[in-house]
Figure 1: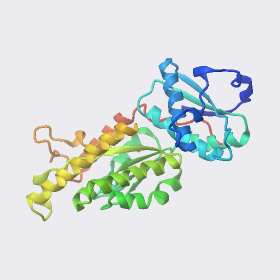
Figure 2: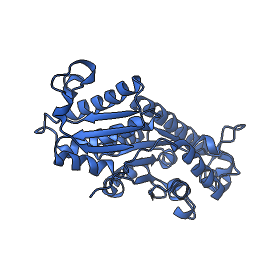
Figure 3: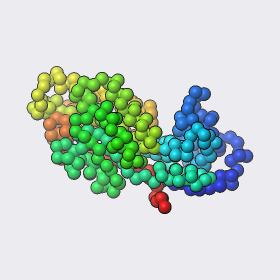
Figure 4: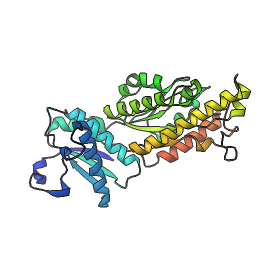
Length: 317
């Protein structure tokens, strides 16, 4: 749970305390690091230090000594999204409370902390092709969890096209999280891995800049034989698509590990363990899931997200 309170931070005696109990953003990051980067690092280190002490609850006093460099709104977006990212990886910390000395800061942090939405940004496999959102994994997860999941999947889109509509379809909703599920159409169209990487990194950076915690999806599997029965093309073309998608999948896994991002595995739940390809029982055309396939994906997402999403019970007055 994430809370925000107004508190006279001078009562905590922070000015007199020295050592590990007090962390300053200026002490973290390389000399050339931006103020925003330092704030993100010190937020993570604060959570890490609390967890190392076995704490279940953490109070973070926020004293902005660089108000001319970073506004309360920007600090709130950085710190709250960073806490959500840290907790999403499976932390034992159960509650984080931001304490601010002034009403303006409290309101800025509350506006980010009380967010409840989860936007799902993707292609046809997010949309629920061919029958649409009512049959999608997004609907399965929303019904089971009660969380406000928003389906922003558009069939045929690449990661670049999803990036282009990020402000409209994600940032404008002011969600707590964005689940980004792209790569299939990039692989199909032969878009270079370098370009896909740039697009995904840009989505992640835009998410954090808007106070949103990004979650990445490992693309679902393909079945080459089934694809060739449903679409025009040669076996060689299908295998190139298969290989490109696997490269995208491997890079997402690596990048998420390095960046400290939660990933959702859409690959394993639909996989035929014997062939290493998608299980034709759960695929409609070698790529898109059947109704049962979407249900399987939804159930897998529910399990993978259990205990990973963190919200606030507080409501804005």
